[in-house]
Length: 71
Image (tube, rainbow, N blue to C red; front, top):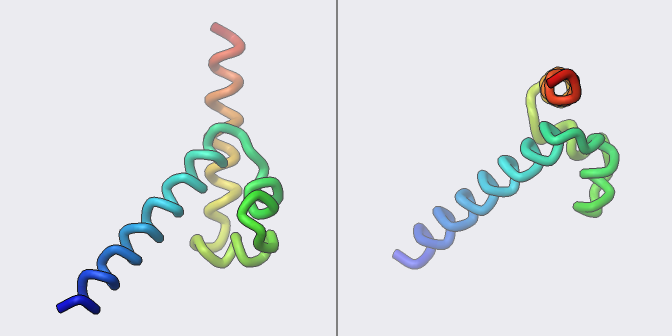
């Protein structure tokens, strides 16, 4: 059915978008900058992930950056 294929493609695109957002944040981009690049508010971006998830990703990025500069 064409509708099923379209729905599957839409879900896959949403998943890819979420992964790219997480990657940007894990690389150190601030959530507000990612939101601005997507043309959405910071609050909208926050609602895309579980509460506190963005802060945890930012902590991971900070630890990664710290360990890379020490090496």
